[in-house]
Length: 409
Image 1 (cartoon, helix red, strand yellow):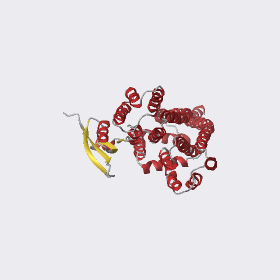
Image 2: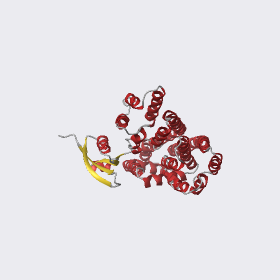
Image 3: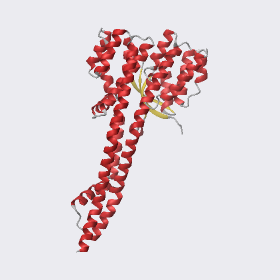
Image 4: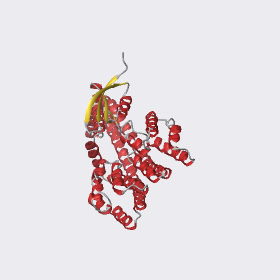
């Protein structure tokens, strides 16, 4: 029996057409690589048939995306080799087999082949679409035009380090509350799913009349136990639906818009997105790229789709003569301090440095805000979970006290 499988592929041609075709291959990554070698842009690759429709699609920019840490290490090593005087092609020869990620190794091999055939390194990486960060190819292009590729790569490495460090701080700050919530939910599920039903059978055997509080708790416990399968299935369905929806631009925009509306936390998501925009723009402008192309790339680099949509008119407005500060004001997403600092940067001619300062300020605000939120969440969660556990214990022991009182009489 053949090991080849059929995949439904949605691809874009050089003429601008979007086609859906069926191709055979060992797996989705192999099929995607073959299509890219033919000069097609791959939007989606999924297994053909019912199983393929039920599973999440293999999309460009999903599992095929280059790990940021791998890209960071590659650029650090490339800078070291270029600094030592090694030619670019020879440096790529030495580095193409070093990444641990198989997809990135394949990508570097193809980049090396393109560079050897006479293509620039920026164009070679740009050919892989969103498998690499949108900021990377324009950064390389700025280095190639200025003849300072090593300096530009150093700036990109610094940018990626700051982004990774900011994300690490946010994730680390959320770990303790998430662990506390998870343990509390497990405790409640054990109590309502196993402990309370056992006590319910015990009370029924004694023929005791249960208090209202105990009856209500037992009703909830029985409902959870009887419908556990449907509740789990529903949770899985909702999770998969949200994940599938997040793979479309409209779905991501809706989900990200919800994030911005969350009380207390929404401002954190907005400031993180604005920080990404400012730092990307500062990096590109410092590399010598004109402001309009820099704006287009920086807008695409924003991870929050809702903020990205609001910033989308900005390149066109600046191209038509509007100042960056006024354009940001018209988007109604930038904060007043950010607009004022950008206006000062435009006036003094130090826009790239001012944008970098704005990004640093926003990162500090995100960290401070997260610490304040966590300072509120942790005691609140402790109080809520302690109250729920106390309620369950009271519901269990209240009938016992009633029975003991009746026996004493």
